[in-house]
Length: 98
Image 1 (cartoon, helix red, strand yellow):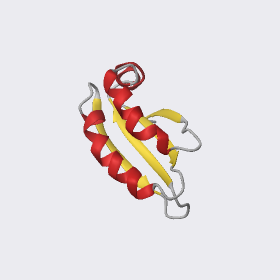
Image 2 (cartoon, helix red, strand yellow; image 1 turned 45 degrees about the vertical axis):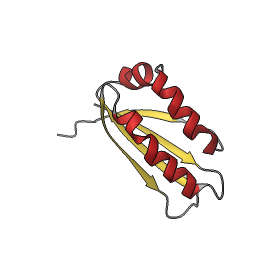
Image 3 (cartoon, helix red, strand yellow; image 1 turned 90 degrees about the vertical axis):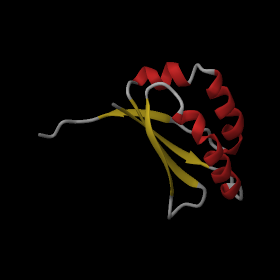
């Protein structure tokens, strides 16, 4: 399992519109092969700052399967204009601490 983590900064005053748009496009990502779950968290200290966490079965399910799909183009069309600066996407894997 891979965890995609994205810190998002939404343009000032667009937070309500962004959350509405994100709700609407959540069905896009949740329909993709390898998708496990996702959540969007709103920062308490910084207005307009969000954390998106998405669990994927494999890295390629995100980087190839989703990012190179027509569904991603729709995701991008509906969400990317909200971000400034454009977010950096990072991927993490579980560390076994036992």
